Image (cartoon, rainbow, N blue to C red; front, side):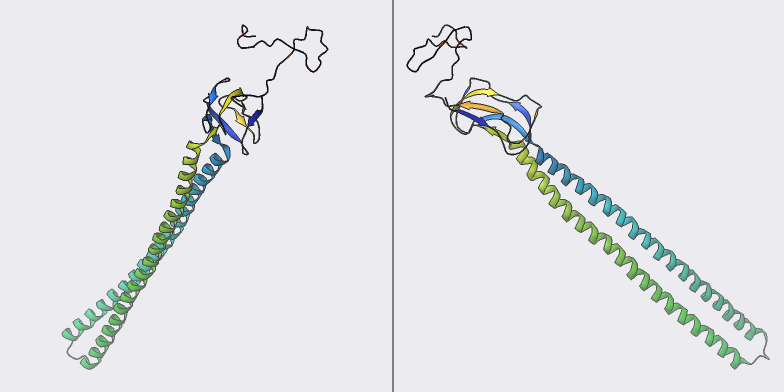
Length: 242
């Protein structure tokens, strides 16, 4: 009988053995359930990339958040400085106003000019305060937008990797060794849980209607076999059949 050795061109792990020696199988019938080791590695690699992306995003987000904290701290410091100057100028204006009321001999025009100058300085500081708020809002807004953009890019990348993981997991679940034709199962060369290298024979199949039969002559016989000699053939599985 013609012998057919069934193997694969990639390494696998045997998860389940479906057939037994002597079984009759149809074409495309499953013989073994397998896990393709390369697919498992690819899945692990994709999941590791997702973890790397998450870690990278967290690190980048922390860096940006630190920048936001520094910008806000600098903004508050400058704001407090401006507010302190405005408070000092307002007290100085109040002092001059009190002096104008208490001392009639003062040069009122000079006092009015001083107060006017102080009010102009306060106005300039107030405008600086508004500009400072606008600058801080723009800087913080830009940094927050950067976090949002990074998050969107992360989600897009993770989605692609998750898609690859799902695709490989589906292939992994469907992977099985199938009979290439209608045949009889000869030998199953593997065990459950075993790792099998590429091109290593896992199952041996035979034609269901053989034109050749492999037989053995008992070692105890003194033989000199010639073409045309006749033999009695006995089945090893069913010893009564001759």
